[in-house]
Image 1: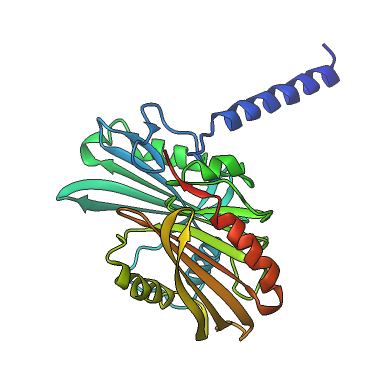
Image 2: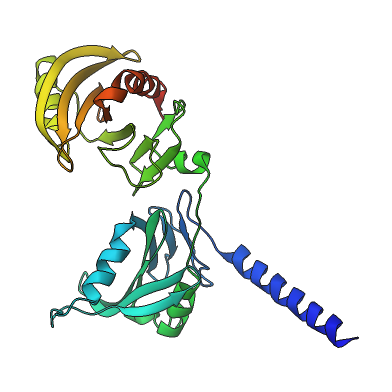
Length: 312
């Protein structure tokens, strides 16, 4: 074999090894964050991540706003650091630069080793928390946990169908919104035309979620709707323009429309909140857009609203 042929074969072998490693990365359904789980860990039944139910080991995989990583990094670079707060260490992962915090803690009176990893990403920050009971550290050693965390990767895109599959309701009409993002831990979804995080001053957006509110008497629904409107963040100078009971896909509902200003830059915006009351929970749909985009946006919001159904 010639030297050139040997080097080519060696490069191909490393490429295959890299592909095999990447293929081993497991992403919880709907998540941008994944890793290569250790032997013995399986997909968790009640949370996004992995677990060894017999050993009590848990690996929680979550997403945080993209600014979370920059905020932690800025605090670490600040001139003064609180002496009583553990300082995360810089940690290399397959996704790039990350920060890792490791501490011994108590969970229900039992000693555990806890690792928390924050990973930089373009759309979201990755967050992985590993908890190992003291009596499982012989199998799940610190070295093994660090090796697993080093395999953490971030995928840029998650198929829309996969994201929507984790919701407790069906969204069948996306009304041509370009961005779909499920809000952890999977109880809400936002649709927008914005490339990054939602911004009240930006393109139209709509959020669909379930709230643990029973419908109550008919006369209470106006109060429930107004109370929920009062919790809307990032707006000021709120002026409710209409509030009325209505049927939404055959179920009792309530609509409130309002004008407001964005707290960030005082932009004129309009918003709508629909509530569709079910037996034990209430579907809440909130849409917002700049005043000049409102007529077209409202039509799209209505299409999304009429395409939301409970899971069978």
